[in-house]
Length: 290
Image (tube, rainbow, N blue to C red):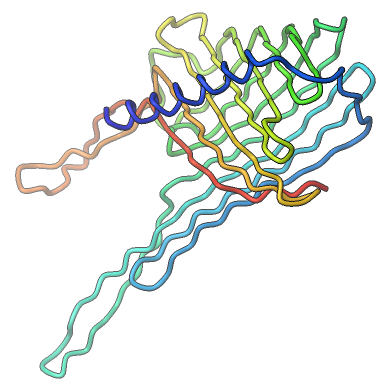
């Protein structure tokens, strides 16, 4: 509950910043497009060693092809965190020999591949289609494949500011680690999303993206992906980026809890339970433009 309140407070603060920034008048004429490919990579690494050992690594690569009235965007992302626990026992009479045993286990791991094509029909209206593959066993699924198609509005795209909204139909195929007999693996849904970007200063940019999905055959099954980030350029090709992503699933996948007896010994049986509805990912990354 405290985590939900904390994330809600951060999300509200960032949303307020987005709305305030969006209400400010945009400056300049429409930004001239740079046609062709643009590429960047985001790299984050945190490692500790010694008495405590852990490592968190994330990488995201993005490729965007800009044409006169169309855009093709491709991306690949991955995150893995692991920690090492060391136990020690003393053997023999004095002087004792201390024996160490180390066990390394993953504590977070997810991967995603995304592709999307947008085509402007007019200056403010476009259609789009895309495909996303995700894997997140800690959230309870080994594969989530989502195809999208729909239309959207480009409310403005000026120098230093851009805002658009999408309205889509989706088809999702999901393989859970623990099957839920009450829900089908494949289902139709609807999606609403917005994408807001603003240059706050000559070296600072704000980005806010919301993706909300509703499953059509189960009203309780809806998801939201809310990502906010702030990047600061340190050169023409390098930037530091801070981001917070909140992933909410109102009907999360199932896990299995082992059944133990009164002494704590396992009985061999298991009982299903719902995983947590909210996951948050806070990242600091180095961004490299190619």
